Every structure is written in structure tokens, then in C-alpha cells.
Picture 1 (cartoon, helix red, strand yellow):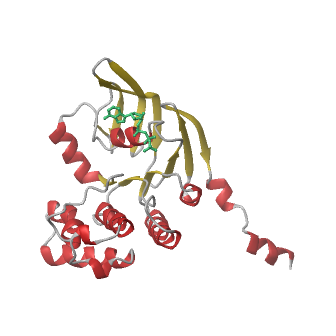
Picture 2 (tube, helix red, strand yellow):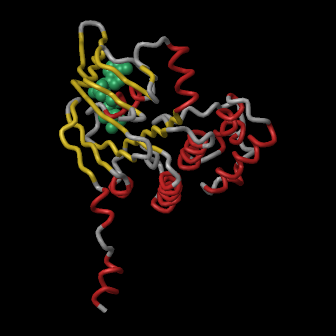
Picture 3 (cartoon, helix red, strand yellow):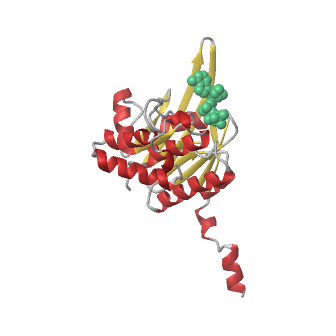
Length: 245
Ligand SMILES: Nc1ncnc2c1ncn2[C@@H]1O[C@H](COP(=O)(O)OP(=O)(O)OP(=O)(O)O)[C@@H](O)[C@H]1O
């Protein structure tokens, strides 16, 4: 059997501040196959962002393992994890983390430049995805000149422009009105159809419903895991009418 793209087993992560301890993850295991789309939901503070950070090697668990593309991630140092992340992962952070001193398109080009893609190609590919997300006009602006929703789409553009094996996204539609959320969802659907693996944290039911699998967390544990792929194959309402007509 081939390795899954991403495998987390028995993850435990406790935050410590002075005398206080908080068990953010308590024995979480999750497997993501190539091409899977997983949505993680659950109430505020249940550990969703912590799990996403561990899956992308931004943070390390106290115990348990994370394997990415056949390589163990969690036992590497910061630079080893950064290298793997750059190669395989696109990340949309809850706090976006756009570089304020660069233009919008400069931010989006970054992952391509880091991969050694030429300037002209990096610019063309970045502009294409910014346009796909409806923020092409803002390419030469500074991130601070954009609305929160526009910045969120720029952060998504930066996360997928280099076609990573897996997109990890923390609330990618959190700051968006419903029309912009639909634009983002369409992009995710197209990328997923093209084979992109996606793991995202969301409170948005429409985004969760578009995934193959919905994982629900509570108090640092996965309490429910639901496969929606069968549900998607059920005939749509329009098909039913046609069948009956
Ligand atoms: N660096 C930190 N130090 C101490 N406690 C932290 C830290 N990061 C997160 N926590 C705590 O760990 C718990 C889990 O946080 P996490 O951000 O993973 O939850 P979440 O489910 O993503 O929440 P939200 O939906 O509000 O973003 C929370 O109670 C949070 O306050």
C-alpha cells in the first residue's frame, strides 16, 4: 500500500504558560490521501488551528507523529520542516501573514521565486490566480490598502500559486461576504478536481459541505468523522426531476 500524503498519529499538544497548562490536542489521528478534501469543524478553542499547524510542521507535538509525503516531519528542526513545507504545502493562516512591505503580487510570487521560477513566469502565474480570485486589479497595491476580504483572497492565491501537494487553510472564507466566499469555493473546487489535496478549518457550512470528509473536533479530540463522497454522488434535485419527467 502506498503512503498517504499526510498522516498524523496520536498527536498530543499541551500549551504551557507559567503554572498553567492547556491540553489543546489530546490523541488526535488523521490521514489524508492524495486528492482528499478534508474540512475540520468544531467550536472555538477545540484545537483546530493547533492541528493544522502540526500538520504543516509550523509547530511540533509533545508526542505523536506527522508524516508528509513519505517523510517524518515532526522530528525535524525548524529549517528541515520549512524545507518540506516549501516543497509540499500551501498555507493560509488565520492571521493571513502577508508581507506588508511587498506589493500584493510580490506576496503571491514569493513561493514561486523561492522555488527558482523565473520572474516573468512567476508574475504571469501570480496575476492569473489573482484574477481568478477577483483581486487582479489590486496586484500593485500594498496589502494594507486592501479590505480584509481582499487580503484573504491574496493569502489564498499565495498558498496555491505553486500548486502544492496539500493546501492547509485556516478559515479561508472567514472574512468574506457570501459572493466572495463563493469565488473562493469555486477555486477550491477547481483545484480539488485537478487533484489538489485540501485540509481546511471552517465554520462555514457551505465550505464544509464541499469537502469529501468532515472531521468534527471537541475539546482537543476528533469526535466525529463523516464521509460525504457518497452523498455527492446521489442524484441532484434537478436530476430527479428529469428522471421523473
Ligand atoms: N500559543 C498558545 N499558548 C497558550 N494557549 C494556546 C496557544 N495557542 C492556542 N492556545 C489555546 O489552545 C486552545 C486551542 O486553540 P486553537 O487555536 O487550536 O483552537 P481553534 O479550535 O482553532 O479555535 P478558533 O476556532 O477560535 O480559532 C485554545 O483554548 C487556545 O486558547
